[in-house]
Length: 479
Image (cartoon, rainbow, N blue to C red):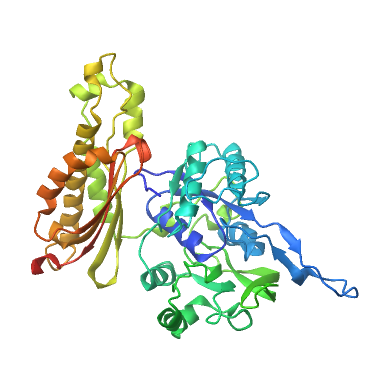
């Protein structure tokens, strides 16, 4: 779920729903290049019927249950990618089951996670230039850790730009308003709030605008964006991605779960692509359907965070050792390469009401702790290295705050930070880091904090420290 500096070519893992489409759009906005899309399709099962006279039971086919993947609306994903986006499409049927359901995934044969591994392995063979995978994981640690497990095995970077981006209504507003996404409900599982016969095939934007989702949130605690599994969607249009057409669902059937009529899916019997008028841009027509073409951020530039990101990138580069540096001269070329390639930019999400979420703050540089230059005295002391990383993180955070101040009407300081989540490779680093933490945040009403030890080398690039924080602009002056 980390966003790395530099442009990477990536494959978008698409379910057809709003989350994976919006995550793809954000990856493009962060400068990465979309090469192709991949999808895991459900295996169909036939519902038993007592009728012997009906020769057609297509509308009775149900998807196999999956802990990991959205299966509703799968029929239309190929059209989304090949016809609407004009990109290569790779698909694999889900053959495995959810055999390992623990939070920490361990490789196990015939698990549905292995289907993802084989799908991405196929993509790599056709597109060896791919370096990363985007996905729409938001709150599901179960899903995120499995995607990261597969990416680690294939030496790919996991890009999940929606991960803990924001909560409740703000997330839905971002998807619909910022992403310009039009989507319909293709699965509901929220009785008595959302009912198959009433709400399937309804436009998500209309359900938000008429107050339906807010009402259900107030009455039943339903997540407006459906992150509790209350509903799933199919994107029919996303102007920034669907350059060549939009989906039109012409024939659909509502299929209720055989054990719970409050749960149902929308079976798409017939779907077509409504062509969009040719854009007045050179080369657009030649891009469609050309497997050698990809999509870059050129089509979807945004300026909301560009100044901040550029400044942090420049700061990160300035912290790299120079050619005359002692550190540079003593580190082998192989390690130098790993240091540069692991440069990293944090996620910055500015929300309504003055809230700002800064996540995945890590040091731009992490030396390989296995390197000792054949001298035990030269080995990196883990705790001291963790302190150095934390001090670098605070410098990056201060840079971000100063850049946010330049675009705000008031000064933003560390006192505006209301929550900090600190990840450490080892909990034993906490004592030394805490002294510097107190110096930076102070001891008078510091932000709420949680600290988690994630394990050795669990953070990217062998980092020892990572930090997330949430700030409320102009709140610190009341302290």
